[in-house]
Length: 378
Image (cartoon, rainbow, N blue to C red; front, side):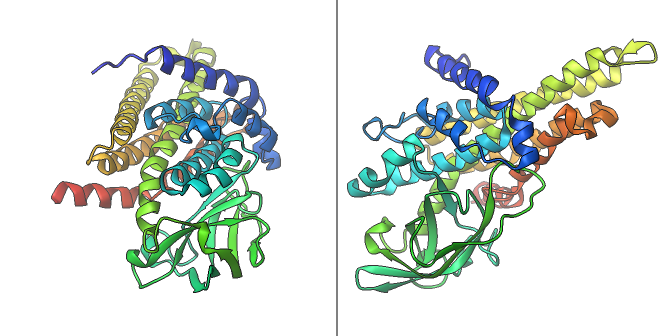
């Protein structure tokens, strides 16, 4: 084992950090306050390869492994968690199409996704099926060379703005074996969107319901065979869990840095806060737990990249631990700021709001515990 980053990894991380420092961090508060989806800025990120991390070079991507992707998402999230998180979802969609798509599908969609000419969304959750994803009800009925879709998806990041939607639909029996994965392009007849959700965090990316009312798509838009959809969705989420865990690392690291600077400057009882051992111990615990989380995320990325049979277990453990610790660290950072942490001028409250949802999406942390326990007891 070698815990040092090699020159390639160091370069990737530095490039992402420089982009975050120049193009994300200075504007993140405004995007959050005004609910601006920074598409032009994300397309600048796309020009550096950050929109096609898991897409092959022949289609305009970088074809990185999952560990390398984690380094990039962690660095981007230090600038803006919400923007990095959307890019993580977009890259998950591109990676799924790369892995499970046909050559025709690759040529049709991957170059547009890699350049961010097209934005993408991942559609699994429904109003009545969250953690119980295999009970989804959105129906795709075969009609010759087409499917007719009816149903709705909930809480879709990029909904209404994205150009391509990866949708899990029911084509057969109840349960996971009756689910298939299809692509629906924006502008397809019968595709519509609900009102934008008013969210606690991630305010700089749109979220809404995606509705299908006799939405007709070609059978050639299906990824894999009928019945492969749940497997595709879960395999995609292994990578998605690493991505969102890495975003938690980046946001938490930013919160930790802000807290360190603040307690060195803030004076109470004629001394800097950093002189008080109780606060030193709090900072020490934050640093220790965040470092442990980082190691778990990097290990999970390594194992998934090498197709280790235990990768799903390690992705679940990393996601559970890193997102819990990430939120804990920024919440402690807010506490160290006292009343000022509750004010938007100090940015900590935005990190708390943005990181909280990471414990819910890509599988709740309760579901991560179910996956872990099932593996441990098998």
